[in-house]
Amino acid sequence: MGWQFTLAKSFEKLTLAIILLSVAMVVSYYNWLWTGLVLLLIGTYFIVLLIPILLTLSREFFKWILCCWFYQSLSSIVCFAYSYKNYGLMSQKGYFIPDFTTAIYFSITTFTTLGYGDFAPTINMRIVTSLEVLMGMVSTAFLFALIWFWCQENIIPEELTWLDGERRFDGTLHSSRVRIKDFYGVEKNLKKWKILKDDDQFYLDSKTGEWIQITKDTIVPENSLQMGVKYDDD
Image 1 (cartoon, rainbow, N blue to C red):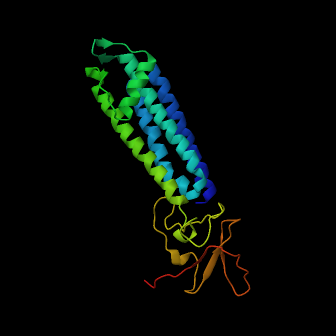
Image 2 (cartoon, rainbow, N blue to C red):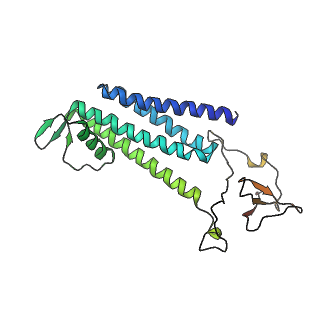
Image 3 (tube, helix red, strand yellow):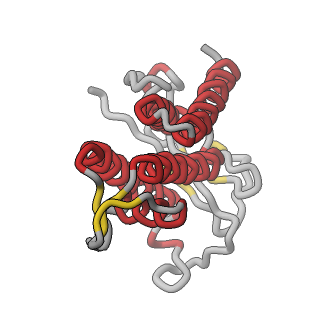
């Protein structure tokens, strides 16, 4: 399976996920509560499924994934807000039909699990609010995971830091990592990729982002990032 086919299928599913989330907001507006929630869950499932696949293809897809996840959170808040607007809320004065602003406010506080206590769901909407709390917890966890992933990918080695190392980071250094799994999580045998000797050395070309093998005729740029590769016999 080529990367072109995988990329095409990934964007096909990503487009489908965006459509499902958009339709979920529309049907929730027309008071089709459970249909909207099912579409919301399916769209969220597709986005979660595509995160490792797109990031395996290229780290440049991180921004796309982050935007899609914000859209998923927005869709969730709006869908549940329409439900509260249609079915009503409880306040200290009793049952009432909120305006959309109040419904959005209650949906956000429920999604983020804040719960100030100024409003409460009606009896027949308690399960719905519980589902929104679960959706919010999962969405927040994935958001923090994506932020931590971005930080981890952009942290440079200690010897290349601005103050701690002997070299300075000029903003152009970046490194790639060997992928030890395919798109579906199956382990790959690294020894089948390329036969390397224990004394092989490489340097990172800062312009292309590629590791170049060092030979006796190679002119290694000054202050370039270098590494050696060694595999265990087992």
